[in-house]
Length: 571
Image 1 (cartoon, one colour):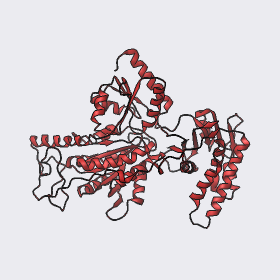
Image 2 (cartoon, rainbow, N blue to C red):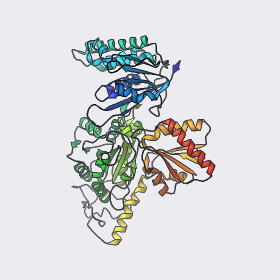
Image 3 (spheres, one colour):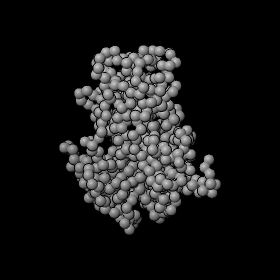
């Protein structure tokens, strides 16, 4: 039997090397042309605790992590008991007999991961034992993993040859154990290598690369899950003349540091999660009031308070739209895929420079950890925008225009006061009612400069449309394709530009009988935003800390659509 898709989950405790085996298999499969996508979930402690990683390998593009497991690799008994129910009818469980044993159940086999590794002379080779067994189960040539092993561990060290040899030995031992078990999942179809060069990155890496491509000069951040890896990436890569990276002592210091950098004419960014974003609210309000460009990346996690530091959620939308007291509306771009993370970062900087103010790049935990192979971006095709800088003479009234005016840079002509109090055209404090009206309308009027966001739309004539946002895009898209394929008359809409929404998309949505919004929060946050703008929207919510399953979405959407058709009205 030829398989075009393979879903495997590795479950155990933190520190058992689960990430290593997932990363190795992902790299090996993507190098020969397969599409890969990973999902990770783990507890917030440094080591230990229930952890699992999922990998999907396919000959076609991957939209979700996959519902049913073809294989479960259980490193301990708790993992087996927790996840065995998600193994498909023809799936296989591979378990570590050093941790526990099972009576024969016709769909599982065990092997001693550690003992087999020791037999190679390399105690760290247990993950290669597992990979060898999985390769046999899906008819994957061992040579593919051997080539990956050779490339990865040939680093010019005296021990390289021994490491490569022991890892290859471990692959063979794992394969032999799988052969003895008699299990087979079929043969994974050979891949068709995509045109052009591919890169394997996660969401945090992709948005960091996008920020660099957009011209990022200053990054200041404070460690917080799941955004910390952005700070680490910047410390390694945002280097050279004119570039500055700093780990602040708090989120408050971080936002004020990038505020100062933006004021000085630099492209600046910070990255945080929900709790840190809350602390940054006053600084973001100052950036809005003083009209200073900067980008704040919020990698969402479960909340409120400390909440679920290492679980995914889409519950910060209302916070980032209006993060400060008073009248404020911050531009928000929320990517839905790893590839979109790159382009969302580029556009976040373009928007910040164009309208001269703060922009939120709204990601989430599931995207931050998700590895996927994507086409390598063509940097020469990017449109990079820079702010309009004042080059006239002193005496310039920067805030006088009704919408936008060139921004003076300190030390250059046209000095001004970047004032957090209400101000007049030159930036001096004023409490005059007419000035507050003028400046409020100026600040909100600038949002019209950002109405160029792209969007997706299919079956536009359908009375009911599915419109997810952020990382729920993939599962929702897969659900839409299944529903449309079964004959259901539903439409599709999607954009990562949530504020302001593309005007043409908003107008289309207002004509719908019902817009269904799959989103990972309790309140149904995007649907409430849409309703405030005249759209008949309802949310399909989930708040488990995990992404949607496609099967669940298909059932819940079908139920809503059928109910709407029966009632003939939408509430």
